[in-house]
Amino acid sequence: MVTMYDVVIIGSGVSGTASARELSRYEGKICVVEKEEDVCCGTSKANSAIIHAGYDAQEGSLMAKLNVRGNELMGKLSEDLDILFERIGSLVVCLSEEDMPGLKALYDRGIANGVKDLRILDRKEVHEMEPNLTAEVCAALYAPTAGIVCPFGLNLALAENACENGVEFKFNTEVKGIRRLEYGWELLTDRGNIRTRAVVNAAGVYADYFHNMVSERKIHITPRRGEYCLLDKTAGEHVKHTIFALPGKYGKGILDSSRIKIVMQMEEQEARLVQNVLNLSEEEVRQITRFRRGEGLLCIGYNHVPIAFYATQKEYDAITTSPTDLLNRNIKNETV
Image (cartoon, rainbow, N blue to C red; front, side):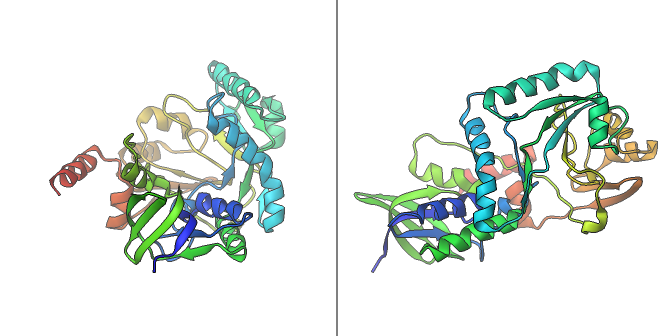
């Protein structure tokens, strides 16, 4: 006999488990379906753990609204779940007077989005807060409401609370298809079919796969790969806030919420922009411009160590942005 649920959630990352916890407040039969062996095995396990203030999202967008509201809710949520959350604040650092209009634009966007207590700090104020930042700093956007959270702790706590409230979890269960029924949906999995009145698609970078099963309006998600390196806490207190470089034509630059930075392959112009900030030698600048995919330079103060990241074939297939790889994948799919 096929069990009928009120809601089935696909994916047990932070979005899926947060949805499950919220739905568990109500009377109903809720189930979370996850292809991996546990929660927090996808994107939720590998991110910068930042609770953003909300100044970066486009003014008037749903992302801006939810970003600011989500930030406001984190304090109470962390208390309820007894998880680590700290409002350490963030700084968007500007290194050139020519870039000040860009910093002011971020400030204006944040004010329009409803971000509280935003301020633009001058050089002296920045160095009073973060004395280890480069002398080239001319200003910074300070967002005191930004914070950091343990992504593993948050994901696990949400799942545990949902489970305690009666939500069912089905692990090692991959959804292969979705079929429309007169009274709801039927999920075809590798461990039997599941019927439900409603489906929540919380599959992260695979959300397009399930969306396209049921919608005529097709979407495509191209995952973007990033690299993180976890070090011992003794790596220290080089900075006390989350530090962002002011976004420029080359992107957001290096994210720093500790003294540790990882520099991947850059064009020479990009490498020159960070040379003084990271105390890079001429040889290191040359190395950075010649790095192959997965190679990087780990920087801790004046200590610099070449490193390399390796992915399994399955991980590579999921995260590659190589045009050749993507083209070959599309050709393969068309011939299947």
